[in-house]
Image (cartoon, rainbow, N blue to C red; front, side):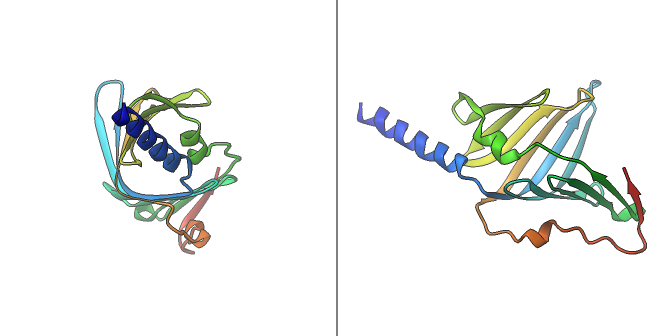
Length: 171
């Protein structure tokens, strides 16, 4: 009986840590699988800060930086010297998504946003992976390593620096 109570206490402590994530940083591997089974892999680093800031720095197979805020997405593609700026209002908050996820089984949670279901896997109170299907019915799996949660991150990190010579496309 003592073991069961101890396990319950440990579960609630680890779940409380999940609920208090204010920032997240990690290396990632993203796998996109299309309807024919073809897999495309990307690698990079993510930094995210509550409430709606994220920087996805893709390093392989190409360099690309994606800056996300509640009101704008900026995609910088150095290899083609191009920037895409989309003004939008994103109601999506990864931290709220995680906070409102429901437990499916040990360390595996399900969350829903819009028309998309997300499967979120934790390991040692860290986000280990997120999986979902995109609007084109591709399966997306993102695996995280070297995770750091609740590290101080400056808002300056989420301000894109656009070289003057780049073409800017406003969408």
